[in-house]
Image (spheres, rainbow, N blue to C red):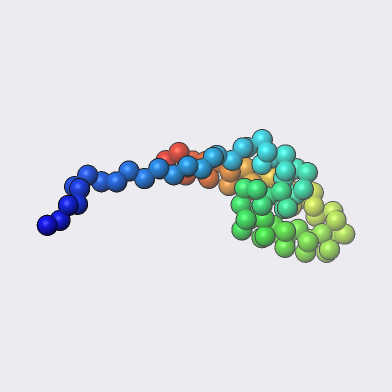
Length: 87
């Protein structure tokens, strides 16, 4: 005799959303390191790219990579929050 319920189990995932303000502030202040709040892979990629660009351009390249970091972090936070609310 099987006593299994035919009702599906309800699974609740509790995870807080990431703050867009904190994401942007951390990325403005710390660049690629600030991206680790929103995206680990993006932080690693941009850290490597920023170091290489910074070496070859004597730091002037940060004027290009820093805004890219900010935009990427904001998009990653937005995607993460959308993913949480769509479940």
